[in-house]
Length: 246
Ligand code: BV8
Image (cartoon, rainbow, N blue to C red; front, side, top):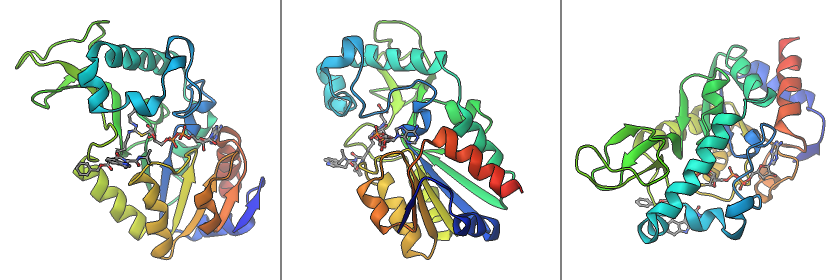
């Protein structure tokens, strides 16, 4: 594994030669937009809670109003910020390689707003509501109290995947297939702690892909990767796209 803060020429060559590039993003890609990462200390009212303890069906059943307010806070924050140069660079990368599969663990809609297309939302989207009882999806409700499903009267919840919940089948299957098929896999802005998302890089590596991580804090998984670029995605990704465009 080559650890560097620059972009290795061999990685640029691998990207130039790639038929198919698969990218996995995590909360770190949104950090430079001002969205706290999932495991950063939470702010204000939420400073006393761990995100992992709130993002569960059990927490919602125990206190739907608390969980609903947490997601309203996160949704409003995501709505107020803008995509950063890292998001825009990934949208540009799609035009520089024959095929790009973007798998995001993020639920903040920032890749969509930056112009990326055909995004696989591995953990859902915070701007979609879903009925906790019958599973039907509904456009985001702005009320501060837990809204009720217009179909069955059950409580609405955010349309995200909580801990202990299965990844949507299409997202899981299409991400797995892309990890198997790709020639280069970029793991960007993720602590690689949450599975099955964190397993995608290993699948890519086991199927012969060149695997690189972009993260200011190299993760344990990076030891098995070809490259670990210790940098912020909002800086590294535009540089990578510029090098590829030369
Ligand atoms: C599943 C959506 C099985 C919600 C999230 C017990 C029971 C069941 C399952 C389990 C269990 N024990 C363990 C598991 C598996 C569990 C898991 O992996 N747990 C972990 C904690 C060990 N996984 C699950 O539960 C998954 N489901 O296994 O289902 C099943 C199968 C069939 C039927 C039923 C069940 C579902 C997991 C999904 C959880 N939902 N999010 C929401 O957002 O509220 S996960 C959450 O963590 C985040 O959303 C994110 O998606 C994910 C990973 O976090 P990161 O994105 O990596 O963010 P983090 O803060 O950790 O790191 C940020 C990184 O960025 C850092 O490394 C930092 O250095 C870097 N960074 C900072 N600045 C920058 C930067 N990088 C680049 N540039 C910068 N500027």
